[in-house]
Length: 63
Image 1 (cartoon, rainbow, N blue to C red):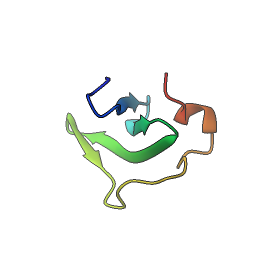
Image 2: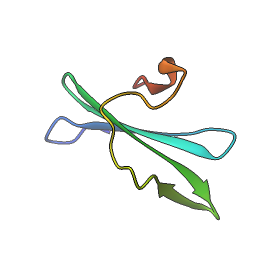
Image 3: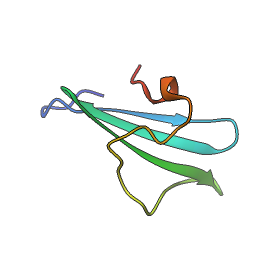
């Protein structure tokens, strides 16, 4: 989704219930991992990361 500040966001939910929230603006991209538990999205307490937290880096790309 494009916002007035130029930020976009993408929430990817994987088959095992894990998820990755990606957000980007210009050259800046950050990620936050989490999981779906009991029908609710729960993010990691570690907060945002400025590097891809997944082994498969292609999964961190914005669509």
